[in-house]
Image 1: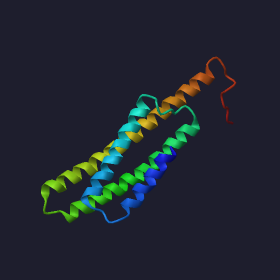
Image 2: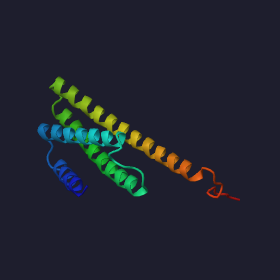
Image 3: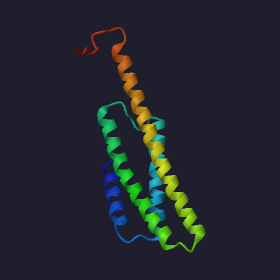
Image 4: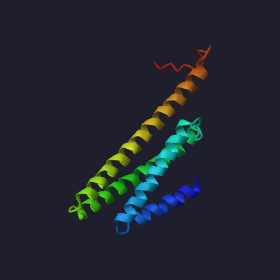
Length: 138
């Protein structure tokens, strides 16, 4: 996890430097790979979400990555503007910007659903046969 934080910090630092086509596609590729690995890990449960601490760590990482994706999208937008004469390149960049945003949104949705599933499992496991766990508010 610590290695991931250092790598992310390096990416953010590099993103703040002058954007170019090569670095945009590198950052885009890194973000896509991270999203795919994280989605796969959440779906196959190799990224655990049973405890609140595990959920908070993942949510913190998602927030950082969302920030990186926004910067990558901004970088791509600038690159598309700079290359407006190359319609094919501009179209590809805009497609990639949309796709990475959608993938990040899909990942957030899956993580939220898994967390909700964990919460339901926890509640069901703690309320079976017992009324002592109910909260009564007057």
